[in-house]
Amino acid sequence: MILCPWHETGIKKGKTITLTKEEIMKLVKYRNPLRKFDLWSDFDRFFDLSPHSFSRIGSILDWGTQSEQPALDLYADESNYYIQVEIPGYDRKEIEVELERDRLVLKGSRQSTRDGVESEVTFHRSVTLPENVNAKAIGARYKNGILTVTVPKTEAEKARRIDVKN
Amino acid sequence: MKMNELAKQPPKSEKDNSQGYYRPHYQIEEQEGETVVWVELPGVAKDDLNLTLEKRDLILVAGASNHRPESWKVLHRESADRTYRLRLHLGNYLDCEAIEADMQNGVLALTLPKAEAVKPRKIKIK
Image (cartoon, rainbow over all chains, first blue to last red; front, side, top):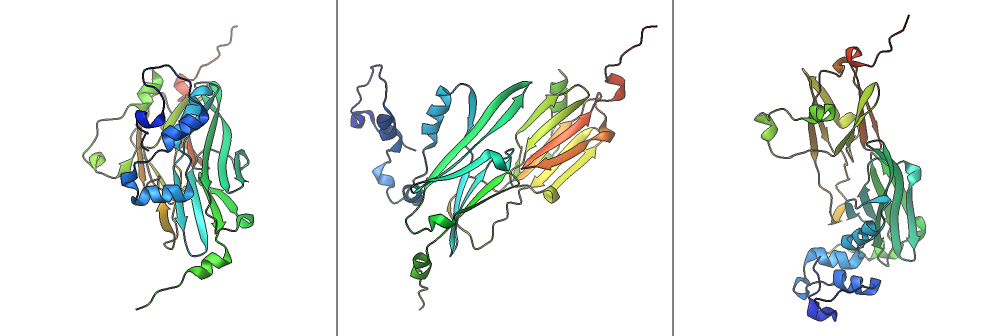
């Protein structure tokens, strides 16, 4: 993630300011145009992974809970997209997978005891799905501390892939 | 104090210096009659976990068997394929013979009962 240079944000330097959500998004969402053809950022834009830093701002404000940023992987084969998140220690019932329009939200909360003190541990990641998916047939599975969400591609998308031969 | 004793790593042998091992996150909880160690091992199945006891050193080696089919193409990756390794030196106050291990949802719970000699004992007053 690259932060936007100050002079491009329109925010005056050296002043105590309160940023609105939009302004924060403007800051964290900025990407260096030189990295336009970078593979990683292309995928990032395609799936629009929620920025880590933004959720971290949230976790600082929320004193009572401990927020986790688990590692997220994206895979694909001919028929499906796969989203995998490493979240050891949760019970199946403590995990929620929700679709808000085209945004797939993965979240959960569990109780943790540390040094005899009970606290709540939560995780939150989200991914914007591409258009060519069958959102009604999304499936999720939790095994060995890894959540795998399977997002089937549409029939049209599967058929679109044509092997190019010599 | 006792927690430090348990978590204290013995001097590293040459073998331990080999590359590619990852030390998992773990947490120690002292309970009345036992000490419980929670080790986070995402992607590790029960069969991929190897626990050995060398004298008073408990050695954990586990490969994340988060085996994905080869047909899955990587689009974006934040996780890493890891071999986990953890070496815990067990203090004298623990009973090495009675260690219990339970793996659930990618978290290993090691229950180490305290040795009879150090357990609090009620003394009857006549």
